[in-house]
Image (cartoon, rainbow, N blue to C red; front, side, top):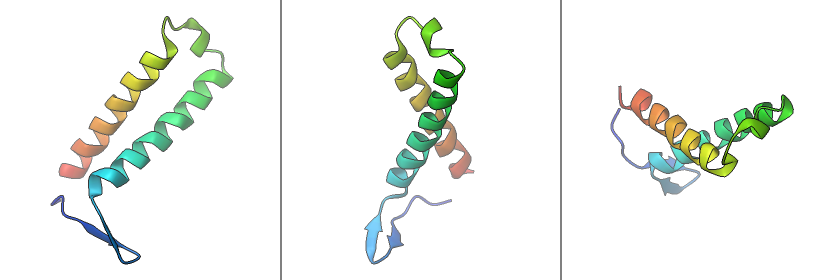
Length: 67
């Protein structure tokens, strides 16, 4: 896949920005599941963990898209 701009309703959007949004939605979904089952209270620094998990999800999406 080439990382070129995509036309989204007449507006050119960088594919990385769409990947950022997708990674955010996946992270928030998994965060909700973790909070629902009480896993978040076992973390030392929940905000740092969520940020690190977001970076991992975003990296995974970019690597999959680059293939």
